Length: 338
Ligand SMILES: Nc1ncnc2c1ncn2[C@@H]1O[C@H](COP(=O)(O)OP(=O)(O)OP(=O)(O)O)[C@@H](O)[C@H]1O
Ligand SMILES: [Mg+2]
Image (cartoon, rainbow, N blue to C red; front, side):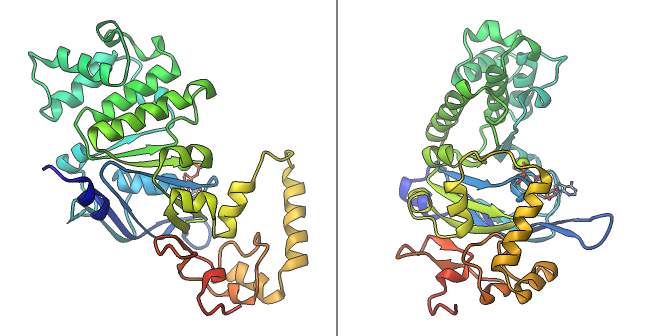
């Protein structure tokens, strides 16, 4: 189906509503790794998902890639609800993943040709006669040339960047609509990260892909995405157009992410001390209590603006005049209850 640019920007190809994922823990309550996350992925657009380690980014990717189950909420692909949780052939064709570690995701005993021929044949994008040509076409798309030579190599004969290009070629082999890229360059040498991100960006345009780009790095998120969602402890704390988020971040956590430069390496004890000093100085007894009951804002113990109202969980409020820019923070409550 041919869609126009205008349609692309209005109807999400993948629509995620109130997505919730919990993990059982050995002791105590379940860990809510993703708490009611809602967002859309649009054809021909990149959405960046940023947030610190453990905030739930990969859990979202794994859920959308159908590697783990949803505990609440819904996902729709091209308007159709995605059922829990069978691997359907059609879904696999339309939604593909690229992981952080290209070495781990390729099989060391198989050639590049094998890695690419398999999905092409499986999804009917090549037959036995033309599969070699189709593999070479794919290799050219990801700029692995000379393609005929590269096709015969094994993963250990390739550089990290070349391996990630193979992983990307494999992901686009079935001609998917959605690409979920979980920190696709963070294990690569700094000097080649940009090349791989440029390649993904070119494929987005040429193949009209909807990309979810997971990263710790707001600089590349800024460069390669049209919108951004920011996660903190399982919550999407801010979402909006890339420029709005980067130039006028609303949530204090996003502000912190944007201002954070590499600081001196604090030891675990020093970090603990810093945290308890902050708690003692800024947070009242009621606020401390909310940390333990987990009912208030999850950012309360790190927030420079924390007030009593933050012991209740905030909703999403519009930041500034752009109503697509939202933050989960009482600072933006229109009647300012603070
Ligand atoms: N299979 C699992 N079982 C139990 N807990 C899990 C599992 N997978 C993830 N978690 C927990 O869920 C939370 C979110 O993890 P997740 O991997 O999604 O974070 P992330 O944002 O991708 O972090 P990183 O930036 O380090 O990759 C973490 O607290 C993690 O320990
Ligand atoms: Mg992760």
